[in-house]
Image (cartoon, rainbow, N blue to C red; front, side, top):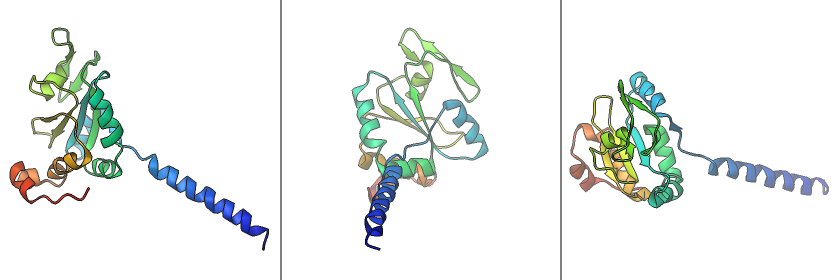
Length: 175
């Protein structure tokens, strides 16, 4: 029995570290834009688009601090279809039977201009509440506590019955 204790202790440490490692690797389930287009038609859920560029410092900070927060990850994965879109992609982007191409004049994809109503800044979190809704862009870096009311407003369907300022007055943060 005495010889088994170190072996059992070693096994316990291995098990615990494997469990901790698994939990910390949880990530947002980012989909491709064409996958989101299909999924929205199959099951209605709000869409969250992270509109970014490769050179954007605050985009990287948001990736590192906000989109790695476990509460943000759990909520987005449970309530949204999420997609990252590089505003400067030169690839064609298909959304709702329309193709958006790279715009040489503005040096970004027309899809980014569509999502931001021509006022692109980075990062921008874009919410599309349902298949028939227009994009709702929220420009700038958002910490988890700043993103929480926005996510819950759309994720819980409050947008269907009240305006955001009314929702925000009674909102209680839990993050």
